[in-house]
Length: 514
Image (cartoon, rainbow, N blue to C red):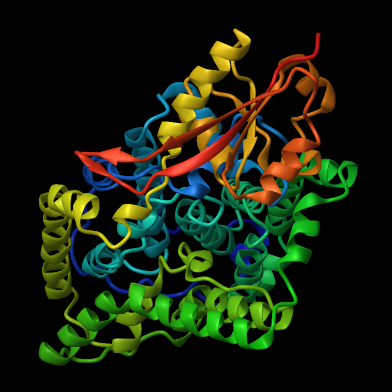
């Protein structure tokens, strides 16, 4: 997708609207061109890829990332907990790149980089020049696109999807043209195919459209119909899958609701203050510059501010309200991609901010933060290896995946195709095993639709249970055959000479029948 286009004359009925679109302000400085923006984003992706590759080296990949890989191996139209798009991306990525930490680090950084590009486009729908540049660079002072970006899952994908959806929504409302409407529907469809949380994104855009000066022309134009039809076409195969399989994600959602009120209240409060903390640095910087270097307050545009506030704050408020109503766990990670316009809103609310100075200070701080993170990365990795409170608790995911695969070869003489086991060891083994097996998570056919009794009979099954995990051992017992053998091994995670606490496993080898 292209970066934000300049406003064009309205077409059709939209051109007859008597009210103007939200004010983007007078140009207040020359903006960098697209080649420079892309060069900066490429440097961003490479820098944070290196940072994550260094700092995450002492540990295994995060559990959600292993799940993304395990699901992405299958290319289903849906999965037990979520729609499929984000897992497809992971599956395609690892058909090109090796199964390694640095490749996952690059995927996470690229996702954040695409989000920053989308944020540049979305901010450009409301501001120009130094104001646009300042609001954009302030995003780098939040941990959203940097430190928190390394955990590729159904929430983190919204770092890239959310700002592009907002951008094409604004272009569609402002122009009424078919191309922005088509693009808006495309991004809505991809967001809905990643997680149903995107319903909040759709509702946010709807509320903002009702506040737009061209709302009447927009809603009576063809644009909303083009967007809705595009999203519907993209979602149709997944809807068919939901009907055919009794909607596993909706059944999973039902299991996550109805928690006790104290639990829900505490998690909601924690998520709220986490969100405030994640966005505090740029807000403080805006306030400091506005206070220290005041400028004459312009007339402003209340409509623009209201639309910005709607697009920025509605997801936070609706997420908290929905969590309290449904009584499900609320985490700050759910909202990580929803704030690309928050720095711009802060600038608008502050009024009279010296955006040229804000840009200079913000860009220097962002550069210092990025360079500083890269400089301290080896030291942080060393601390994490030898001095972190969790250093002895690191699980031997890589070690058991390799050892268990080797024993499977010795016992069966066959490649390992299916693996189950103690929670998370199944997906982690799917990632780290040299045979790239399919995960049979929790030994449930209903949650792993790519696994069937016939496939297990033809290819066999390896179970990796931590000693004492009765749930895993009992589940394994349902699949044993007369040819089944077992072994007990003890392994520990090792890195840079440090050895974590050993973990004992029961390996159950269930070879193919016949």
